[in-house]
Length: 324
Length: 277
Image 1 (cartoon, rainbow over the protein chains, first blue to last red):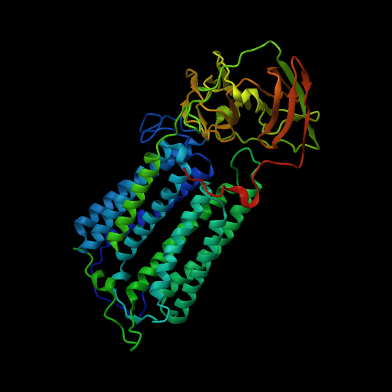
Image 2: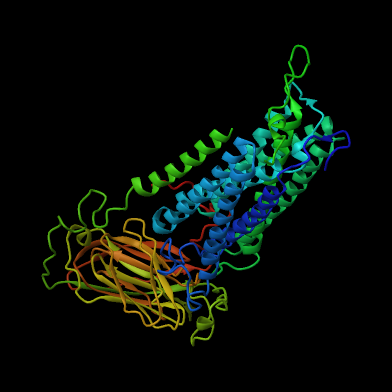
């Protein structure tokens, strides 16, 4: 991952926080998959109360049947993710020197609490399920992006001294990759809107075209300008692979959904394809976030008239000296 | 950047709360004019000259073989006696069952009609709703019973009435509820067992029927007048006929559904264009 031209400047990165953030990111992927299973199995209203489930925190085995398995598991996993996020925020507060990263830990915790609240509103107000499910999906993916960002910020590679590279003044990669992150996030929300029937498939298809264009443009720009630098090239290649997989899964999931329109209940392969589509969408967002952060770390603005770099990358300077 | 992320999260949470709470729940017992259904209409007074509409609903073509329901996710359902095939399209000897037939227009929309005091029962048995399609009058009691050895939830998703979602364990007492506004038809679902679906036609008058397995229906005590006779089927969609009933007349109104037609959304219509409160 680290380029040979880069050198370590901090011998004490915050390894513990980094490992916890990695664990949390994997748990969040599991949570996203569990949420997708709830939607795909039409299990969202199978437990009609909240925050309790059938009036209890721990339900009996009699209740843990059929669609309740998906909804209750989603709630339990969400609870574990919430507690782990609290642990991460406290850990960052106690061990992290960078104030903005400590704040980011608390923002992640606020996000997971807000997400729990939105999920509760979704259960208690079923008549607005389509509208509420969209922000529920937005906050879920945003939370995942924040956790991935914490993984990046606490990584050993982030604390290394990288050779600053000039960004193109004509089509700055930093702006392009930032726009791609935004587009992927919007696309994930459009997908959620379609799944929850807030709107039809057309916005999601248009979003897919836009995201494909942006990701391909970003990857081409990265490979042309910095293809020899693994630190940027590797996430760029990964996001391209994920994009291809995501497009295939999207088409397959849609065809499966059409084919299952007359089925008496949600069945395979529609369920698995839809869940995989959502999870790979989350992974695509995570990878593009990694690429974006590294671009912002490594690439410096260039004065258009002179071609000289404008100062040092802002994040890199503050990334050093992670652990207290 | 961190402040921006925080602001975005706060705005999203606030917007969600406003959407859910600020919009408020739907008015349970008022119509689009803000008046209660039937409250301002004069009560219908019988002159003893009412007629009858009977008929049969036929199915033209070969009905697709019913799909098998997978009840394996709940052993109580899988082990329960009874049919395990989907019952959304029931065709026997060329006749179509579970068609909701009702009158609209004319006297039935201009007058109000007394609400029956006896409840209408929707039973859950063999992890199926019985009946699959039913009618009820506004403010008439809907009694939901659970004859199964498992938990269900009853979740009607009306557009005009108040949506509700209640859990009912095995042996639990019946759940009673009412629909205050006319609405054809209200889908009902058990979210624990997603194959469990029913449809309830809510009308402000008693002139409705549901076709039996032989495709036949009867609507009795119809006041003389001109009406639209509506046939609704959850898979095959809606058809209408103009009908005039003279004093004490018995009229036969048959109709045929073609095998190819479907009311199900396909292709790009699989989701609605946009739904806002």
